[in-house]
Structure formats: structure tokens, C-alpha cells
Length: 241
Image (cartoon, rainbow, N blue to C red; front, side):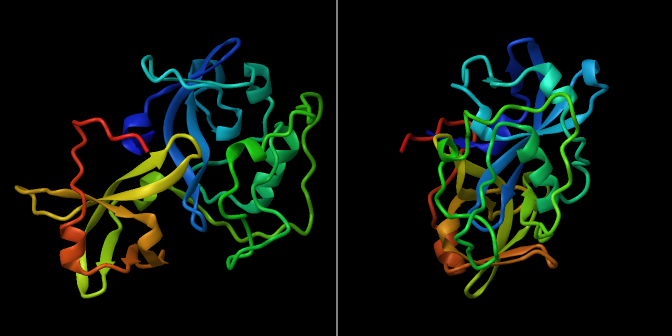
């Protein structure tokens, strides 16, 4: 089913010992536009520390109660590598997480044009049930790991300008994900004015370039085609499929 990212903020992350914390935002990779981590703000039990949790350890979500059950314990999370989520996350830091938690890296031996990630890899392909979390020793830093980072914060990209083939047309206000594989399927683009803020869905498959330095996204649509795209109403449930 398709869901908006904003609607998932505030979901409780829960494990066998109780609640870990609340989902604050997400990291996606800028190659496949797939969610790679939940950024979870822990409660008082961990002094509000923010931790990264991969979707591959999320069990069947409880959509009604806004909860994400996970196959982790508080002890595992407490002893996990401390990643500063206020700064860019490097591949080396992701290696640390992968060495500690029971999930495998999502990039492999078939590099894409950016040197990482296999397009279309499903979350189930990333979980390694034979890997045990090392709770007794800190993970070692892996040498010679590519330092290029392609993770982007969903909060950071909100407000990026959409550049159509014939000019600027609106800004990103939200994202639509497929909750079966955590891929971002659509950008929600606000195309109107302050008093007539029409929102439309633009497929991520139509993205031709992202200019991270200038905060804009180029798409292979004209301004009229963007404005005439499927309208998004955040008060209505999204269709399945």
C-alpha cells in the first residue's frame, strides 16, 4: 500500500522489552530512492539519543495503533554504534551498523553509476538470520570503505524546487512510499500559491537529475504536465497498488 512519509512520523518503534522511541524522519539513498533507515528518537531510557534502524528488522506494522514492531531489544540498541544523525552518515558508519546488527549492506558487487546500491533489492534480501548481534564488544572500523555518502534526510529534501523541462514548478512537500519495499514512488509537489496550494504526485521515475548543491530536482515533464498530474489530498487514504 502507498503511504505518505509525513503520516509515518511519530509512529512508535517497539520491541520485546517495550517502546524504543518515536520515528522522527527517514534516510533514503539518492540512487534508488529507497528508505534505508528510520531515524528514531529514543525516550528517557536512552537520554533521547537518536538511533538508525533498518526497515529489514521491522515486523508486520500495526497501522491502526501507529506502531512498528522490530526484532531488536533495548540492550542491542543501547550498545549499538553511536551515529550522529545531525551529520551526513558515511558508508563507513553504515559498515559499523551492519557489523553490529543482523542486517547486511544494501550495496554489493554490482555498482550502479554512483558506485553503490543494487537497484530494486528488496528488504527481505538484506536480512541475514545467521548473523548475531555482537553485544560484548564494539564493532571494528572497516578500512578502505568508500566514503561517498548517498543517504539523504527526508526532512532535508522537503522544500527542494521542482524544475520541469520549461521552468520551475513548485516545491517538494512530502513523499509517497510503497510499504512493501520502502521505495519512494512519488514526490508530493506543492504547485500553487499560499491561498491555492494544489498538491500533485510526480513519479520518482521521472527524475532526470538532482542538484543537491542548489536544492532542486529536475523532471522530464513540462510545467503543465506537472500541474495536471494526479492531485494529492492528504486527508484521503491513498489507493493500494
